[in-house]
Length: 231
Image 1 (cartoon, rainbow, N blue to C red):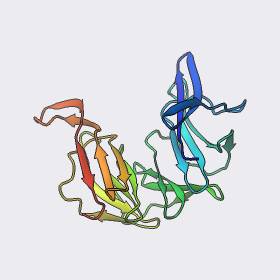
Image 2 (image 1 turned 120 degrees about the horizontal axis):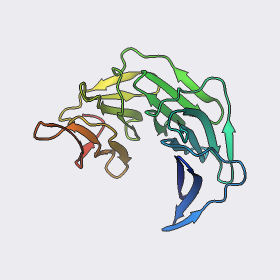
Image 3 (image 1 turned 180 degrees about the horizontal axis):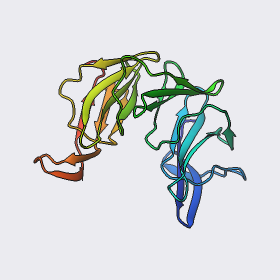
Image 4 (image 1 turned 90 degrees about the vertical axis):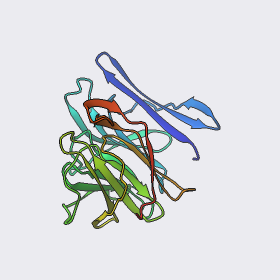
């Protein structure tokens, strides 16, 4: 449809909201969603399944922020529908979603549990067992699909006392560790995206616990790194 799709949801105490907007030709337009919409939530996961044009949304947490959600919703451009199946990913808020264009699947990486899930409209959620080798368990890693190599790249994490800067690639069946020379300093929740014109990944920002001077204090990083996926 050649447009951006923005979902805004709030479940803060008494302020509950769920709405969607499109951005096309620099103009925002609110999307009418009908009577059946997903419940308001925090920290949901949302991504487009590009081959079908469907927007997939999974999980989050409710208004209390104590109950984590495991529901799956699909937006087809006109309405939401809930996808129900027995076997779905766990209700953790560190699930990382990306889209594998080569295999036309949404991929969820749960590095804290060393699990991988895939979703497509025909099969729903399908889980992969723990692979060997695979990245050691971690939280808040950066995940992105590299169109040039056809692999999903996962980098780093931050558990504060056990921060990692290693880099791994998932090809749809196995993990392999990449050399990752000159890796960015440790951080959590950095953003990483593939840039076609550069044929590589741009890695930006994130949260760090150890400042450049060496003191232990939480702060936001504002540095930018480039990774070609082959180093």
